Length: 276
Image 1 (cartoon, rainbow, N blue to C red):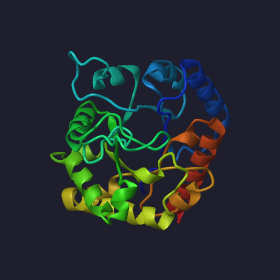
Image 2: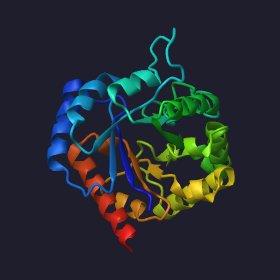
Image 3: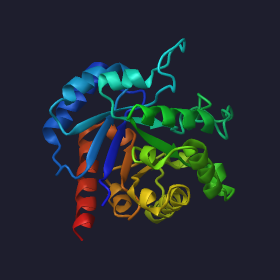
C-alpha cells in the first residue's frame, strides 16, 4: 500500500514570522496516525527557520522550486545543494504557475486569472527532476492541462507529453524518489475542483503511462497526488479513489485549521483502505 502524501504549497505567502506561527499551531493541534506523510513547502526565505521549528516532529520540509545547477552565476536561483543544506527532502517541480503554455507565456490572460510568468518548459523541468534525484531530493512533478486543452480534447496528449518530457532518461531507482501531482490548470486557485471520478481517470492514465515507461511494479509504487482547489469539504471523495494517494494543497494550506482537517481526512480514508 502506497503511503499517502499531503503537501502544503504556500506559494508567495507568509513572512518568516507567519510561517513559524503556522508551524506552532499545526504542530500543536493537528493529530494524525503517521500513516499520512505531511510536507510543508514555504517560500525560500522561511525554509531554514521552518526547518528548525520542525525538528523533532513528523512533518517534512519541501521547497517550491530549484535550479538544476549546483552552483554558478545564476542570479536569483537556488540550487539543490542549498536546499539539502537547510533540510529539504522534497521539491515541487513544473508547477503550472511556472510553466508556459506549450513552453510559451500567455499574455492574454487578465488580472485575477491563472497565468505563467516564467515560461518553464518540459526541458527545464526534466533537468530539474534529474538534478533533484541526483541529490536525493524527492521531486513532486506537476502535470496538467489548461481549460482550452481540455475543451479541445487533448488532455491525454498534453499529460503524455509532460510525463515524457520530464522523465525521459530516468531509471527505476530514480523513479523511486518521484511523486506525480495531477493539477488541472483550470482548477488551480479558481474554486473549481475536478470531479473525483474524472480525477481518478486521469491519475489512472498517468499510472498506466508510467507502467509503459518503467514497468508496472514501478508504476504501482509511485504516489500520484491531486491538486487544484482542494478543501476539507472535497478531499474525502478524492482521497477515496484508488489511484489518488493524497493532495498538493494551495490556498487551503495557508490556514492551519483547514490544512489539519485535510491531513486528518486523508490519513483516515487512506488508512481505512489499507486495512480493507
